[in-house]
Length: 238
Image 1 (cartoon, rainbow, N blue to C red):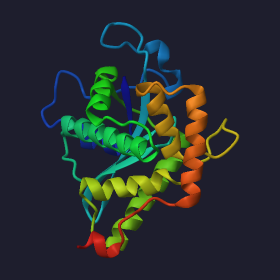
Image 2: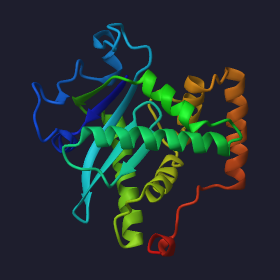
Image 3: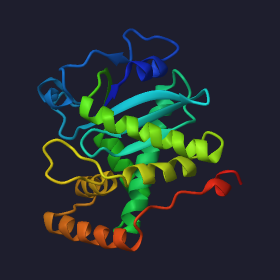
Image 4: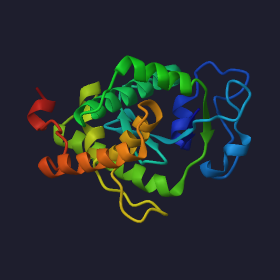
C-alpha cells in the first residue's frame, strides 16, 4: 500500500476537478504515520503486508507547478514539474514509472540485476491500493524543504524550470546523494543507498549478507565518484 501524506498545497492541487462521492485526500487515521498500522486495510480486506509512507508537497518555481515526494523511511525524494492539476492518475503513473526506472538504473549501476518490467509489475501488484491523507511529518518535512531548495537552485542555474524525465531524474540523483540525519539512527544515511537496499530486499531477494556486500560496493563507488552526474548549465539549455 502506498500512503501519500499531503501538504495542504498538494491536497488542493491533486484533488480531482470532478469531485467524487468523497474527497480524494481524506483525514488521516492517526496523528503520525508510524501509528497507522492498526487502521489500514488492503485490497483483500487484510492488514497490508507492505506499506510505503510518502510526504508530498506542491510548490511553484517561476509560476510553474512543481511537486516533490519524499519517502519517510529512507528520505528518498523525487521532483516533478510536468504534472497537471486535478489529475491523480497522472501523478500516480509518473510516480511509479520514475521510481521503478531509478531503482532499475541504480541496481544495474551497482552490478545487480534490474529488470524494469518485472520490477514494475511487482511494484504495482504490491501497491495496488493507495490513499491520500492530509498530514505532514515534521522530521521529514525539514528534509523535503531542502529538496525543494536544491531543485530551485538547479532551475535557477539552468535559467528555466527543468521538466523532462531525464532532467528531473538527474536532480533526484543529487538530492538523494545528500546525507541525512534521522532520529533514532546512529549515523547519517544516504537516501539513494537506503532506498536501493529496501527495494532489492523487497523485489530482488536481497539477504542480510547481500546487503552488507552491496553497501561496501556502494562505498567503493562513492570513493571513485563522490557525486552523481548532474547536467551542467549548457546541457540544460541545449
